[in-house]
Length: 538
Image 1 (cartoon, rainbow, N blue to C red):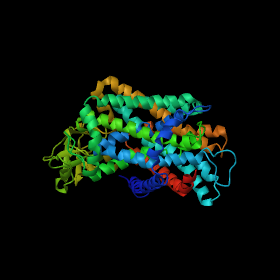
Image 2 (image 1 turned 120 degrees about the vertical axis):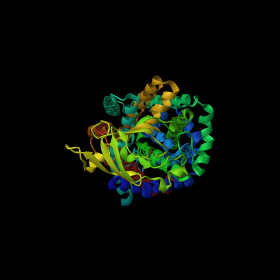
Image 3 (image 1 turned 45 degrees about the vertical axis):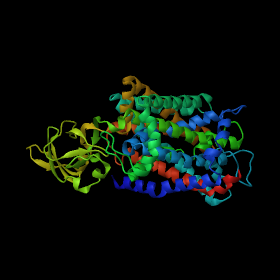
């Protein structure tokens, strides 16, 4: 990983995650576990009579914004790296983070003490910028900037990268065109669907459809799928056991997989809920309680997706796949368990000659994060079967040699090392794992149906983020200009598809998504912590 990518991960682990957890736990205690105690009120809000947008529409929009395609791929990545234990962490995140969304809506629909203007701020950033304290006003400005980062860089790296990955896995060809179409749809929905009830109901239909697809997938093996709910808590504490080609995971690896994969999509929309619930009909407390349901919807749908991967056994079965060379570890003896995988003496060191795509070295085995590769083949930077040599140190390729015009091996530019691919039968990850699971459910039909639902979800979710950003900016810039800004998430999706089609980027798109999630998590958590006592009085 590049130094920038490593720095982003450090900021995530040491600043963003602790701050979000602290803010969530503080509100969880101050509000007396509202995730459970206010749930009846939240459900009543969904049936709120009267004029104006229904709270249910805002719930669905907020749910689509946090789910998108990123949540599906992130959940698949977490299960493929940590097994069923990732689901237990998912529920913990939901319980802890839900109060932050409640506080966001409470603050957005009220005025600062002593500064009542008769009109609520309409967004968390606007509420903070109207505060009497200069420190809080500064946090409001930072939150607005963080929303721009989340709507651009964050969407690009979380939902955009996931969209490109799922489309490529499901379609093989034409993924670029599909991604561009979704990006355009997201921009149009942000402009045309604002303040329109049908956008919220479209989001709701996509959320329900994804939930139903997960349920149908669980029917492939209900015992294994539903049994994972109980097993997930044991795996989270003690680690995941080996399953077929999946070598298992230590408890620390389960936690790391969940925190690094599942949490970023959940925090990427912090600070936007207030703008999405600004016009919802009903009392402030009841509408704010309904904001808890968007987090609950995220957790339930992501759980159903995770159970589908487990029920179909897709995460533990090898399929024909392709990975970057940097993602492969070379070992001199296969590993079957998590403890074997971390034994340093298994790592292979030496020179590896590749002819016609095949390695000419024994003993030598290629491995991904959680399992071995069968029938390993190498594809050179030109896309042809590899004719090259590699210097491998402690399992990782670090030097590339290629034949010159005379056939002699000479050192190549280090950047070409990133262009080498390794193919073979391996455990799928991300979009390929989603595709493998749905293929086992109903073949090409369920694959295409899942893709269609995810495309709608990511388009509506990106539009919802754009609408929230535009509503937040309207008090500072012209409304027409704010509407233009609302297409920013759609533009980020388009950029992600272009970069995905161009090949590996440095830093990777996932690192950019983590950057967006880190920035919004840090600023939103600080802002809500600063107003936490006030929230308890509202």
